Amino acid sequence: MTKSRQCRWSLGLFLAFVAGLSFTVSGADWPNWRGPTKNGISMDTHWSADWPSGGPKVLWQKEIGIGFSSMTVSAGRVYAMGNTGTKGDKNEKSHRDVVYCFDAETGHEIWQHGYATPLDPKYYEGGPSATPTLADGNVFTLGKTGEVYCLDAASGAVRWHASLAQEHGLKVPTWGFSGSALIIDNLVVLNVGTHGLALNKADGALVWSTGTKEAGYSTPVEYEVDGMQCVALFGVDTLAGVAIKTGEVLWEIPWKALHDENIADPVVLGDQMLVSSFLGDRCSLFSIGVDKLTEVWQHKDFLTWLNSPVVYQGYAYGADNKGKAFRCMEVNTGKIMWSKKGFGMASVMMAGGKLIILSEKGQLLVVPASPDGFKELASARILKGKCWTVPVLANGRIHARSAAGDLVCLDVSI
Image (cartoon, rainbow, N blue to C red; front, side):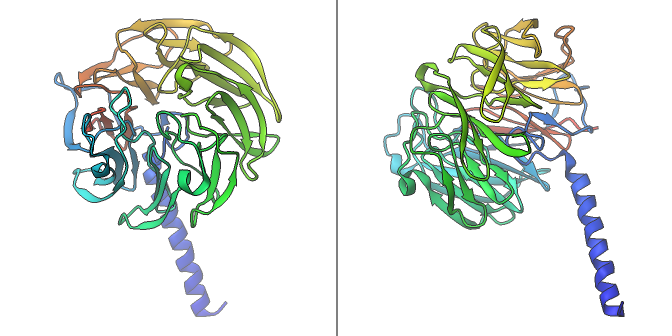
């Protein structure tokens, strides 16, 4: 080996080592909807529920505009979305969706990118619902009318943009497109169209589409069967499984919901799938096959609406909107283990065996993920107004927002 080749080889090893270190350090990031493992569970271990009497320290606060999009955190930055419109303002041409990038430690705004999109407050506040997705140095966003952007995560510069509804003749669902982008290999998979579509990650070109019918509101959820990569997602009145590489619809089952509101994502548990739908009036556990789902059990005692449950050690935790309570359910049997009222349409994530719950009215709670009962470890009122968006724990900080656009970052580090 020549000296120059040896130097290049050594440099390559060093850079690979550094990259490995960077990955390890950023293991507590939250780069996409439902986190790095896509199940609502954070890998962050450097946090505590031992809070002062007044609640965790507020590191920073921002106004980001109306919406229900959650936050993502990557490489020391926080990404969020909101709309500049106000309810009652009929000048929709002035409304804009804005993607924000903040410094995670200080809240300093690094960049923002805005584009024309109506607030569309149809029986609710309106604004964007999909969460920014970080991958390969880019941030991918989806607006309610089908505007997809790939932005440079460092600068906010537009890499590419697609107007999906216009370009492909897709029907926009009643409440707008809501599912966040799922990045798999070279594809951007979106719940847009009958059973979703996929774009080329590099340039936004259409790779496959399953039709032009209205989509459901869930984010595509990845699963694997017989070595084949697939996604499960809600349509307007169905639940379907789609092959990721080809877009082939492998199976679909009827799933009709009031107002077509199939929202909460299915939860994949190995070769099983837990599906819960409040307005579909049904909670079911399925066994996953290549071309079908086989129902294991069904009942109406654990019906989530806007947010998916988290599953830990065989138990599901989430807000049952029919019973107006936060519940724990044994997954294998569907048995309700405990129920606690008073949180409204709460959202939940988990870290270190503890549930992090945000109530509909802005109360943040930490509770052990245990079938033995509800035991509050910590609680603080952190936001006012409606809070339907799941909070995010990343790198010792909890990020939470209200529908009105109040974004708060709390220090819970140890």
